[in-house]
Image (cartoon, rainbow, N blue to C red; front, side, top):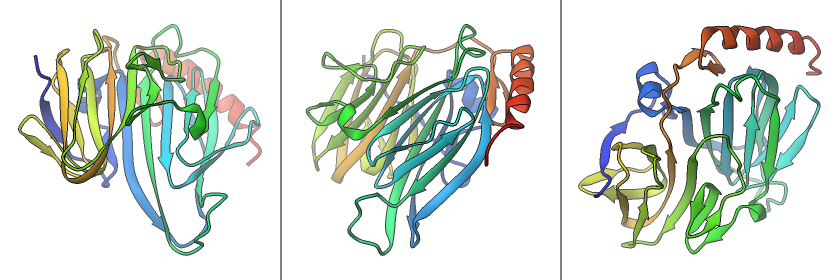
Length: 274
């Protein structure tokens, strides 16, 4: 069986692809995805302290360094091509800044890209302790032309240990090349996002910087690079049967859990050193 594209998802503000309630219901536990590029003439930008709870966050980025702080006073830097996992649990405040690479030689205009995925945590984890995992590029394994962030590819496992069944791959194709991947058992929710270039899956063309929601089955995904080199993200997960109860950066499985976490966020927010 082949796994085809169900539809191309149009973004809000050019970058917010998984945002609206109907899309979250369609893709849960994948409940938010931002993907896009930016150009700067300065040293970068910072998204100030803001709270999350009930979700796990994978931030994956290129041609920029991620500078972060959090409400537990754990500052750090993740370098170009790395990734970060935040298990927000019962609540965390964090600040994220995207800055010119520390070793950049060209100090003029520069371009970076950011891809951020939110995963709804299962009930046993949504009010748990906060966890961070910062992964620099050398910690993310390559298998041929595929970088493995989470899940498994050709026997190699990604280093992100998330509390759901999830596959997150970054695939690089040269012009005219084809890539195929058998859906892991049960991971029938998912999408493909084109970081650079264009793809075809079946008869569907996926333009550059677009998100294609895949059909819900365990079929073979076959992608073809169109016209030039193509880089794309593949995200697959076992679908969730939980409710999605959202309030800004808090996403839980029920209203009571969200409210308890909101109170926790309020209490720790008083002590943040901004």
